[in-house]
Image (cartoon, rainbow, N blue to C red; front, side):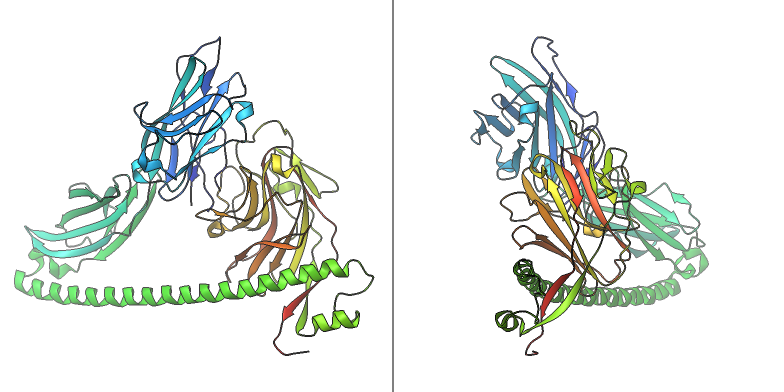
Length: 519
């Protein structure tokens, strides 16, 4: 989920949401308060979430103030908070059901509006206004919305003038993308035509045409660049020398070009069919994994309940117990999760973190301020195979922002980064009074209150990592893992508050798994 971050640039996403802010104070009054915020534009990705933060100086409780976010006009309301509740009467229709207020820090003078499912139309300037009685202050924010569209498609349309005309098309980009043509030797082409159009959602499609006159150019590459995200997609096409008029008479070249075009079309059809087949197989595999993980989740939940019962008696929770226990375990097979003794690795720790308790507990050095971003530390233990688990005790978790789980050993954990499975993080955490699985888009875990003790069960045999509330044995969430996950490490993150994450001493846990009719 997105997190409130101080003046540090970042981008918001669908998984795991993020941003860079711009706020300019206006009408400073030393007698009352000033509205302040981060110094740069906020960048958000289409389909993700973004936050628009404002705070007052000196810090004071703003819960009883009128708080308003609007576009170019006062009447173009994005979000209104008055009399300690949201006022929807004046809100623009395009923001209905897509905005919410982060209330965690109102008593400290901080207010943040979150916009969900960002659209191209959200791009532009915003104003936040704080009113206390007849006195008010406001500040401006700039939101830059960006989206990466389709891979460009390049094709030859035929001879033109003294060369060959090549066309490149792409769609679904925002803002208007930039086009670049390059030859095989890296030379840029500066002269080409370019047209743009926008669909009903405000997304751009682009078409660019280039006349290639040098028969030695060989491969031609068309690149489409998003200027906000600095991300691009490219496609390359080969132009045979017989296509060029000076190399051969026009008619033979046309015949050759027709043959090549037919072969290109056949190749494209084969590629599309293959890609469709692969995607269908991936979807079927994902559905199978989902079914397997659901069955594994129910199995582990039953196992946790059995573990709680076994802990009350000095004996194993398997077939060596009473007749009632044997009857319960009769249709289950026993598989052992190895208890992993986790210690924190100080070399991987963010400088804002303090490690104590024999390298088993971590807190923020300064618990009175937001760290401005995720502060993380890894466990020393590298995990490459098998089944293991560890437990983490959380204190003051409901007054803080934090997360825990596993990550790949090659991920970046310094500065700004996104905690998403796509980049090697499988993490659950507490933010904004809710418990989240960090996914794109956000997936809120159903949890009435912050867990005080969480078990992380890593199963590299079956390919998943599951989280359990160890206080009542309930299942929280499970992530599927891919076969290319690589080496994993325990992961701990704190962003704000006085939370402490402490690794608990654990005992070997017997997991009961279903095996049909076996006894």
